[in-house]
Image (tube, rainbow, N blue to C red):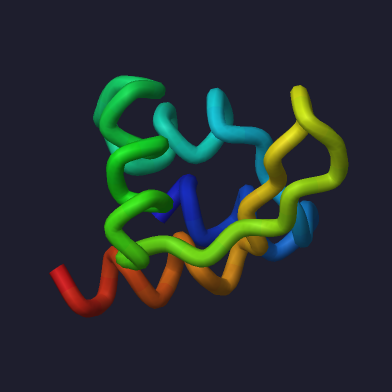
Length: 62
């Protein structure tokens, strides 16, 4: 339940934050993005943000 409370207050998550919420490595989050399982917003070359609703959608589907 902590993850739901967290996403209610934050709309965009860094890859690091997403990995902690999903309980996977940062590398795995990038693989999920590349495969299309998670949608993200590329802010710059070094900054990728994932909408919180994408994390919730992924968790509910898996």
